[in-house]
Image (cartoon, helix red, strand yellow):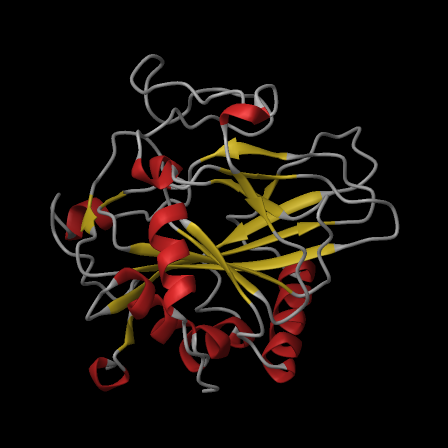
Length: 274
């Protein structure tokens, strides 16, 4: 594990803005591992993989979820890098568990934007001590990077919709406030985003409103994201299929229970790993 110290300024940015850029978190060997893992994942998508671009898109946007137990390269970075120690610092948690991994690849020329959304409403968890790490293995331009509305992690929860069809497949229509039109009213929001090099990591709260653009021809955007949960996270079973889904979990963990389960192994502290 290569140590990484989160500065006071970075910690303050994460807490106040809901997102922060951490430069040079992963070393070259760890990035090479992730590249190999993503390429293996693309060649062997799991049954959970989803195509998130339209058929007429000149590029291709594919996502896959919860592959850490099947892809050793993912496992090694999740368990052996500095990410879990960073998660403990950012979330003020004594214990960090893995929630899930998420591969997101936009092939050259993909027009499909990742629309503005929060992650947590798609999930089966409640609580605030959480962090998502967005880890590119290709250089990311300002046009293709992940953008955030600063401070939006304080709430409210906003209506999650399917990225392409815009259907409300999760909470019923009218149950949550609709998303603001950030692009139409940029003066009403402080939008954050960073050009990124391989090794850089963006850390954000699962309620922080975020979006991303497409990619230009000749450019590829391979990203590995890993979501980690801290001390106050509790199971929140839904009456609908969450994204990702954890089949059978509602039968094993009651509502309000900590996510103490083999699906969510302890990552930090190292002494608590089984």
